[in-house]
Image (cartoon, rainbow, N blue to C red; front, side, top):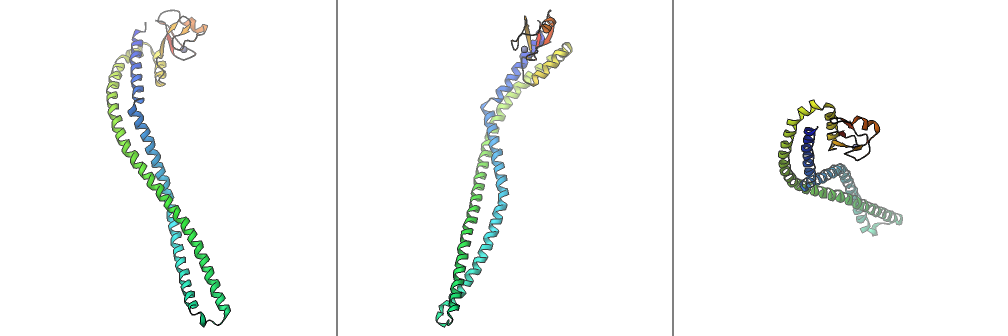
Length: 241
Ligand SMILES: [Zn+2]
């Protein structure tokens, strides 16, 4: 009994092996890891593009600072020209006033210089990170293209063999489904989980799949050829040939 079912399963196991072979091929692994890297650098670029708003704000602040510095330099020039004619200043208080004002302007200029440097280095930093991310994005896109071509070529060969197997299985299937509807329903569920073999022989009290001892109730169901029951340990179908 069940020879047709085992024959079907044998072919199906080969098909599953073929699917696993493709997934474990070097071409598939390269294709997958390149894809992951590509998506990561894409994400990085998107994040840095959001930071571009930071560059704009920084640039605006730099412009403001430059305008203020221009004003301060103009004031300094004025004071300088006054101080050039220091002999004409009669009031010592006036001289003090100019000197104090000059010092204040120089202090302000120093503060602006510091801020300018920090804004500037932030802009340089964002620009550099952006350039790096774009470079790695382009590189992974290029490598990904080559990996995709290699993978597609391997995949084509596999899918030719795969459809051969599938056609063969389909030819056997209709008859099995009408002959063993309950077994095939369980089989299809286990196949989806890639748990093959799904149908195993019952071995005198033990499951031929997981090797565990089955319950007395199950033993009672498996007395004669053609009988079957589900293993309560691994959920495979045990059959009596
Ligand atoms: Zn079992």
